[in-house]
Image 1 (cartoon, rainbow, N blue to C red):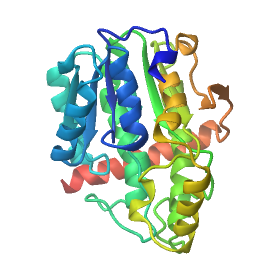
Image 2 (cartoon, rainbow, N blue to C red):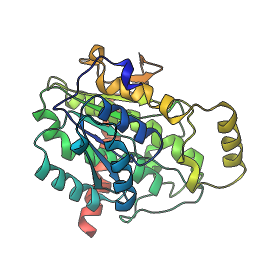
Image 3 (cartoon, one colour):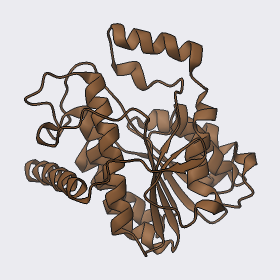
Image 4 (tube, helix red, strand yellow):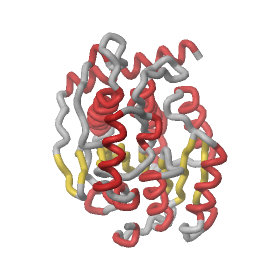
Length: 290
């Protein structure tokens, strides 16, 4: 994986969210092998420390892997993380928004936002915005938002399933469509700054994403994963390619899958702006109640 890239990331700083297991951990491992200073995030400090110690063994400089606490579904945690990151680093070369989840029952975040949408969309949206000065400071930086071929069920007027009957799979599908849309917004806003923003789809991967979901549909997905899904290491290939490959230096606003750049659809500027406004409102409401 990392050995496929003739890239020296020494001196570069990368953040990978949700990197204690699965795809995130493999992306972080690849970046560490290439020499980057890698900051991994986890909700659980103990799990973060354990993953840091493991990943440090792959880094040319063992101290080049750091673990920081972050719950992307909690807006206060996102703000605390970015403030702490700014005290340690004055630049950010690669941001991989990998942390994600889906639930078969409707849950709310600490801020009262439907938890799937908070985790997969609103939190990463705020995180990226708060880290944008550090990304700009790098000169040339990359935002890689982990996406999916699953994308649909989008209802701008009911993003939190307050009127629709909640369906966990549909909520996840909607969140991954929204991930594409906020990425197109980021790419447009950052055009000309040297910062690119793309969605990278890992494919069907054996991970712990389904650990919070229950039911027959989940059981079917888990059985299918055992038969057909690829390993987290293989799933991390396209995201790592998106993060480091020189050929993508100027590529932005694309859906990347199988090491190919594609049009990810859902790029209507008015719809993107509307989603951003709704995310801003959720973030503002969270700040008001903090």
